[in-house]
Length: 114
Length: 121
Image: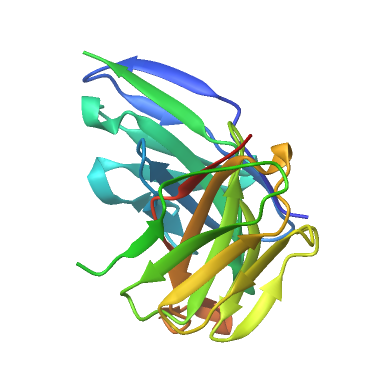
């Protein structure tokens, strides 16, 4: 069965610092991988996705993520965090033959200090 | 702007009193989803509609029902809310012909509404 683990429940960084949010997945083959962001009071917004090909994917708002098959990871990165990036971030996995069903991780709450 | 709208944003109900949450969309998407997100937990898919075809997740309690009277609207009915049903309920939509990928698989990006936070007293 598919599963997603986000080991960090809460991360605090200073504005301007770099950021890496961890995501590990469990799936028998290469899954489809997603990162979503949820700002307070808002719905989930897709940041980026990986299906195949180049393992480094670029997303919106300056985020990128790297798929590492050997580590079953899909970590999200941003070189310089802005205060507006404070939000909850969810990693999700979908089976290629059933992308209607996304399995989400429990999320990482990002706090940004000025 | 095209969007997914959920009403109300906050809903308070009493234990055992039926409640209905509403989702509407202006995206003209044919797939609509309902997720339950409990505090500090991952969103969990309850069910989804593919046009009018209802797809229930195996572990979704019978207490949860859904209606989709037309393309734009979808309702989540909780027949007898328990304290454990207090959560954020997220509606999402997608279109089933969004992107075709290698291997013949398709990908349907899901667009989420802001959610309805349900409190059960």
